[in-house]
Length: 284
Image (tube, rainbow, N blue to C red):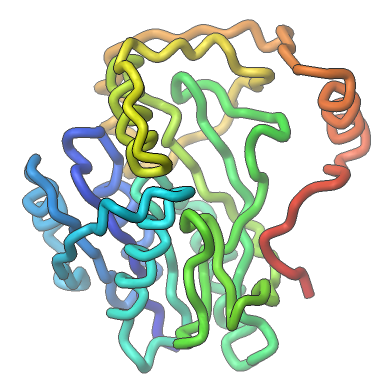
């Protein structure tokens, strides 16, 4: 079994992406990691090189900034990175620049890859998600956040990134997947409010070409949060220690828009079932 990680990134320093931590978090599970470094002007290439692993293969790409509808350029860049995955790869481990794997989950991930490596019916492995918000102390617990997504796929030329690179398709259909008892820690909404505003300004350009003011981002408008009581991945500890802002939230405060969202939230918390949830995959 050969495992190849793959990711893409551009201007990671400017927008404070934890991409070095993301890559380091999957290195122990991978035989090699492909990193597509886009046309950057902030030292992103040097950041990736500083990881210092001979498992990493870097290649360069130029983003097509005309692909602004729905963040399509993100899927195109994902496909470029995936195309550089070695042909003899069994599993390709996709990680985005603001996602990190916890070392406690390595055994479960390895076991799942081993268990299904010879089962061609299994085209991907499905991970649970923790979406951190505002600070490293809170996670989103509402339907605002997707709760599962595919992050390990087979090496197959028929598989392509879907829409804005959240999931994958094989010849246009959803992938058949098995769940893994492991989490992806998503840190895309954990930044200094000024830096978060800059990141969202850049995202607006990627998704629809619009310009939005880069005022400090107001984290208080979220609908629901829970306090995180677990431990962060070791690779994140240094970044967390350097945190230079404060964010506190009253977790008893719920800010749902409409009775339907409030009811669905209650059902999920009471019975552990997310009704009418969109699934970007087919569980088998």
